[in-house]
Image (tube, rainbow, N blue to C red; front, side, top):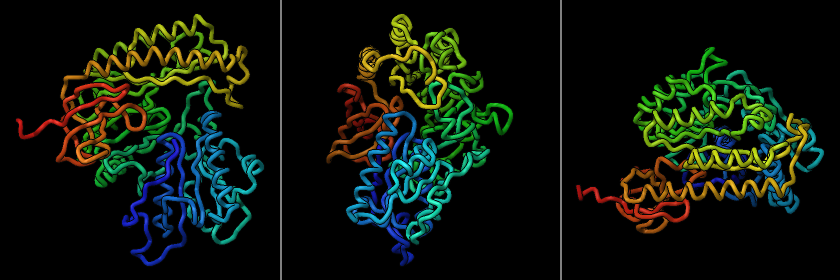
Length: 468
């Protein structure tokens, strides 16, 4: 995801006019996942508090910051493309400097400056707290010590005092950093370090700050959400954290993302099933279902356990919507193993699903595995699996037509046309609801009668409250 902030010039959080002083103006581009977005928002908050002024376009700025993604090759190429665009702007005199932050510098280290020597400064993932010092050095003309890297912390960083890029009514809440899993295809631990839990009291304080700022939907994120608490408390404590988050006033929806399929305790399932705020939407990446593939991926789960978990979740959580992701074309994946995965998708009927083709990541164990497949085979398998999933998703959408559901309004499209989401749709990932109606506003929860489906989206008419 590429995002340039949509700036309100009257917003005191992004302007230094009230204080009568600005150190300089800058533009910010953020790429990648919600965890990276939170890092971006934290850097924006620090810069704002230090009297730097954020503007919406890079042309004419003192500097540009690009917070990058380094997850897979396509993400790295996207990040490099944006960096090159900003460096070209710098050559034309459109900005004085370019700072590159986040996962790409963490992944590539000093080689990024070797490849793109015109970058002024690079900042690793955990150097974000010193971004104002880096900006000061750039504007001060310092051209030494152009790299800033810090070790991963033993506790997740404080994400309060963020300048949010999301709409005012929803936000992401990161409860831990890093990952202890050793999946053979994944380089995230190399970039984000080992699992580090954010202390419970800090998570609650951040949630309260977000609620006070108008947030109604909290999307809970981490690299491994179900592992929350193990390193800090000696046991998983996600269920306890969720019960405390339920007490935060102003929050209507708690949405759980990135749930590794281990540590789904009975306590956690009961907490989700019995909650009025934790919506029955679980994002649980499974990656594959064939036992041989799962072992080669080093997922530490097997088919029988995965099938049993899906069945247990559906039995115990009413109206559950499951989102998952799969990797196709992993080294050594046979036609029979892919067919087993395809049949599992048919049988499990995930309401929401994404499919990635295997990306060879340098330095990961999977790089050395035999049986790497041609891109054409990987792409064909992705297309086939998504064709199966499309029909399942369309049938799920059709099953909702005729019901009245609460819709969180995300945006106004026209005088009486709005865009929103039901509980089954995470922001920026899933579908939307096109609403006809009036008398409400963005961020409001509105009862909507669903009247039709348009591909992955739904169509509805806002209910008349006076009709009751």
